[in-house]
Length: 470
Ligand SMILES: Cc1ncc(COP(=O)(O)O)c(C=O)c1O
Image (cartoon, rainbow, N blue to C red; front, side, top):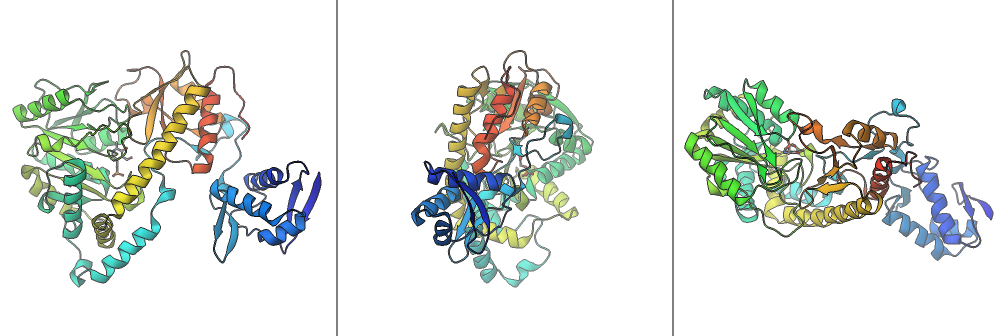
């Protein structure tokens, strides 16, 4: 074993094992980065000088750098050398005890998040440049409460093509994400005299709260394996559904149920709010189109860029039935918090130029790989757990091995440095289904994904309580 100071202008302490030269350099660098000894941004010696210092072939070092770059530990840039990647140094060590655990935990498997590290910066910049070069001066004024016409047009064409939505630019309204859209819809419904609406019995608590803030009572819509259960004649002003991919259970609303909900809407003049939040990410090749085309006069279609691009953009869109259009735009006009016109124009170009489709396709492949890895890890290391709702989206429900309750499972995962959510966090009333976790597979950086899942499965295995080695 040779211990070396590779000094090539920058000291680097590495242990080289004579029988496994490449592997030991690789592991030595990985350990140094993981322990924080090499901090993010640190410039590594050029492969030529490091190989001379270590007395190994230059190719060996080049291969180590290439491997660690592929794993995400290093970033190599033409002309500026190889550096330690930004994310890695920020991963804190696994906490020794639950009490000492602070948020955020090192491994984030909570649902509701996208992989923002793959945000298409170059293509977005190119769209921004084109948008800025061609925007009329008037675009930089206060703007239309309905949103920029370029973006409404691009969204309408995309939705018609990709989701089967019946839309044109005049029926689309741009919002700062679905949260804002729902908040405004709640106000409009209340102003129209409605007192009660309904939402699926599983979903974000924040959506129920947004509706309650408008003075509406929120009744639960039962959910089973065929999606939401349609009411026969309940007099709700509106019902909030996730038809393409029930959040968080993962089922698609069956065609029969879709028809029944539409019948309910027609019989009671009710409104269906279709939250189509992650429909682009379907893995079983089964086309599940939007429900809106069945009854555009009763269905508010809602889409968002939060899953396909990034939640930080705060961009979403509604396609509204005629009777809600004017009241909604009037409500929209009363609030500030409009999405920046520059971002709107950029997204319009991004969609119209085909960059949006390309990014969605790339993301779909990447998420499909993570999903496959997740399924393999669970079936290999936690065979007593059952996965539900895997056909689409960026998360899945993991039914816990018998004897393990949700609070205990979250506590154990936390000890292993993993953040996950309980299914009951999303339930209108607790204990309606088998104890489960909701596991998102989009948030961790690619190089920590397998570790994150392995830690989770280990933590849930009845007789294993210590964190696994990396
Ligand atoms: C079920 C569901 N609907 C909609 C959204 C999008 O919300 P927003 O557009 O406000 O980011 C999310 C995002 O996490 C979601 O989980």
